[in-house]
Image (cartoon, rainbow, N blue to C red; front, side):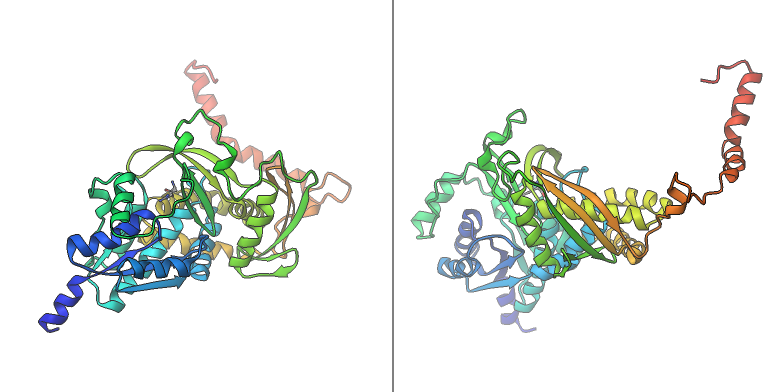
Length: 411
Ligand code: ARG
């Protein structure tokens, strides 16, 4: 590489651009304060808004290039699907929407940097959140030679300062009524923080929700849906084959109508803070529940037992920015092997905030009526139970006998 090409690439930075105030100010700041050429990158992971307009806005602010990448299918197939196989819920509750999207955005950012020969990437995360960790650890895993810039973490501009900075430079600032919340959305869910939600005792007001109706306002008659699975991946709704993206979109809307998928938690961030989070994730809640049910029909007891432990590890790693870690990859491979026979259908009843599984079937079902029934058709060998229990409990007999000899009480 000759000197001038070298310095060209030193001057280029690929910014993960959302179109919001922070990253809009950031475009200009990187140009003015650091003398960089900004390549804005907006990744479509199913967030709302006019993304073409956002792409355009970056150019108006001064980016030399602005790219919009539709990554919805990749997000569904490579990130959401493994999360379904893992029944992934961080701390047992949060389906990880934001956490799953960040490594994908980082991956596309790294690829974009390579395409433009840029040596730097930038994000607009603050120093208090998880997203900075996810962006930077993912980028490090994919190309440790890239330099990461996170100016929002260091500059001491308040929101008012940012608005002033933007106005003084002709950067368009949306003069919405000013939502009291901080929101992030993608295909897999919506998160809502700040404002009154920062008091963990306060019930979330209705204006914190956007995807779901209040269970009180939801239809008064239940709706039954049937979800088809192939090797653990949902692939059909009410008998109609659908791509994962379309299935998730449909379930978000059907589930949302019934008030399904509202989650209110105190969550442990990577940086040690406990935060109050409100999530809406109708599709995620329905699909994970349905998937887990189908596993219970088709997997052995010991496989279910062992898998469950790794599910928590998977969710923790996704949350903590370790998506590209070898352990996470290994768990994904493990889940794919176990999912070979997780095919079939699950019937779910949606009613006033609840999604309840009411039926399941599979060509690989391990449920055997003649073993389970208490009717005359019973084929279970009752006489075998006696010998089984005698050996199963042998260790306890020995323990109790030895204790008795020593005069210890057995309970
Ligand atoms: N607490 C959630 C998480 O860490 C949501 C974060 C939302 N991010 C945001 N920049 N508003 O995954």
